[in-house]
Image 1 (cartoon, one colour):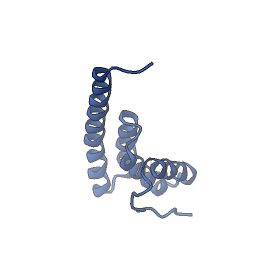
Image 2 (cartoon, one colour; image 1 turned 90 degrees about the horizontal axis):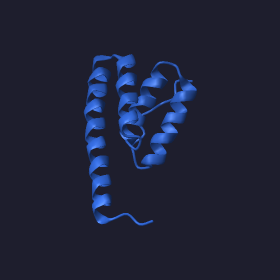
Image 3 (cartoon, rainbow, N blue to C red; image 1 turned 135 degrees about the vertical axis):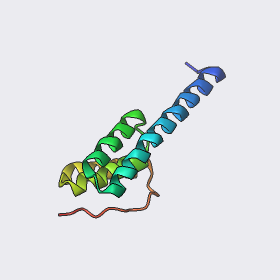
Image 4 (cartoon, rainbow, N blue to C red; image 1 turned 135 degrees about the horizontal axis):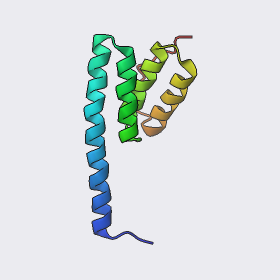
Length: 97
């Protein structure tokens, strides 16, 4: 079944609003990272991915925080998700192992 143009516009609008909300939470995660608060970085990054599950930067920052906390397997899976969403994202990570 095809969606009407109004339905497609509404869906795009909701996706856009979700990305805006996700990026606001991601800004909190970045501030926590700059303060050296890895746990809050992970918390806010995870919240950002819950709001918008296509936000590659949120997944990337979450992976960095997980890596820093020693959750290497979870970090690797999360890095892979970020790469799936945006293969052109710069690699800022280094797995600690």
